[in-house]
Length: 158
Image 1 (tube, rainbow, N blue to C red):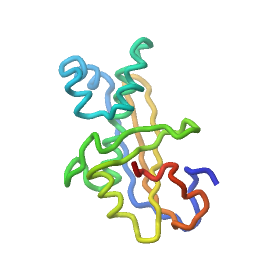
Image 2 (image 1 turned 180 degrees about the vertical axis):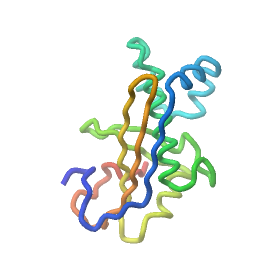
Image 3 (image 1 turned 120 degrees about the horizontal axis):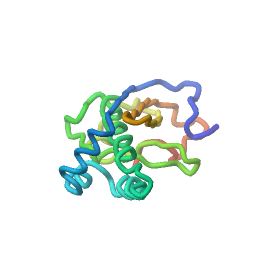
Image 4 (image 1 turned 135 degrees about the horizontal axis):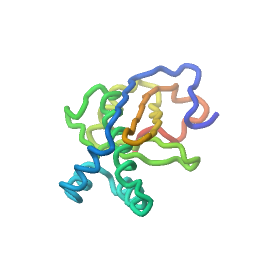
């Protein structure tokens, strides 16, 4: 079974969605520059987005990642409160290229708290952009810990 597959016995713990205007991120990058980038995005996200500068996709890449953080905070049920910060959620790609989120800090604590005993959390993420908009959708599920395919894949744990 693939790491992102929905397994028998799985439950949905949270759902979040966010839609953002890419020009809002462009303006924020122009106004606050590296200060904004370092406050909100992980080193991995910065490297991935900055590589898209030559093709003109830098702002769209940052916008998708920002939307993913917003969507994840909604799926966690906290928003950016209760010790959950933007940098606690980082968009990464599995070896297959599939995006997911790696959680640390308060976001990881919240994920652990909402995961039922004997289950492993999974974060399912989809990203898209169609200028001027970018969107992210997050579903957090939990599957039995003894299920097939419950390796480190997209468990959301750093």
